[in-house]
Image 1 (cartoon, each protein chain N blue to C red):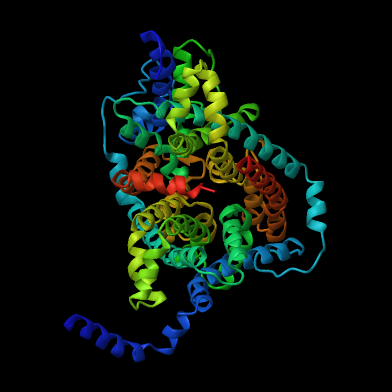
Image 2 (image 1 turned 90 degrees about the vertical axis):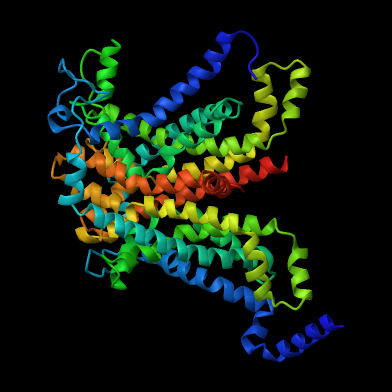
Length: 313
Length: 283
């Protein structure tokens, strides 16, 4: 008796206390609008608005501090004839393709190794992720120092092993610089692939492996016909994220080479920075980074379509 | 897992794993050795006969003390910490509310908005930094921490929202309905029933967001100009390299110390971090 008394009393007292705002928030649509408001404001102000501003800048002749006039597509046609821009586009594609292939192959290998049972597994997994969590710019400086032609520990090691006889100028040689930058990108990306794919591997039922083994499948066949198809959806999403990040990469190249030597490592983002911030040609810089957009869009659409197809099967 | 002779275990497992670990961790060892090596050993060419790369005969802390006393390193650390914490809190707040709305409530345009947030998740910072620098200047935010505190959420909110939506979807609806039958408003059910259950997700999102904002570079490079305002990554990059002269000892000491906060947080919350990482790529 007493308990129900208390409850009804409280309900009686509480009901009229609900304010207009509380009643409004009982409506799903109003509540949703209120909850989404901060996100929409921030993303609108700092993503949608800059995007529009970028499109506008790219069709004007604005400089830092000087509002520009409309010039149509002049900036983009100028880019088509800009030999450095063409080099940057080519480099970006090579950089993205080569780095992604190696990151996927090595990351998958490492994930398969980490998926086994061994002593110190949790410990190893935690340490393996370090290159990914440490600020990229800071760890890249360690690589720059390791690549230094005069003081390079890599050169010393290769020399001691008898593999080279003269010094290698990793970052100063135009034919080697892009490879060196890719090595660092792969180093940073492999842990991300490995840990994400490991999470995917752990969701695969081990009984499937055992069943295939009983049926006489060799380890390689078991991987190719059982593990790989089941892992494919996760792999595709990981690759999607990684490709976008690699395509738009900036900090690695900025620290290691600054786009040099002779633009051998110039990428979309570093070239946009050089023009837009370094030289102050806002509109040309905006045009360069906006030129990334159609490529990114194609990459995203193709991969999302592929992911959908994989998931349907 | 590996059948057959013992040598097969070595060839297929221990050796590759050992090489991976060596390759992935060696740069950090190199940072450590460089930061305690005196200059006269540091600038000894690799062809010199007494070049001893893997250890140092006379370890010194002079680079660390120089870094802490002669540069603004401590200031940069404080700046980065402040910016990372505030932008993480803003993003968690927004992501929590948006994630709840998008995963639990039915309202017109919900699907489109969810897709929109997913697309912003894929926008790289390098696409927008030039117009954004213009906008920051027009808002008079240039060279203040607020330039970063307000722009970092653009990549943190989509991530937090996406991750937390996954957690919210896993919570049974009945829980909330029970609370509502007992007289709780929608608002209270969300605040006192759903959010507490999602705490592990909030923790994962927060830790991952913190490391992302600690590691961000291009916005910090473009939006900040005075040495006192810089973050660790930018300060080390621009202030410890003067012209063509690299202060390698200080640089490596800075790289090492600048990594400590993320490494520290990471070491305590490895599982949450990994959950955030793998959750962030779940389709």
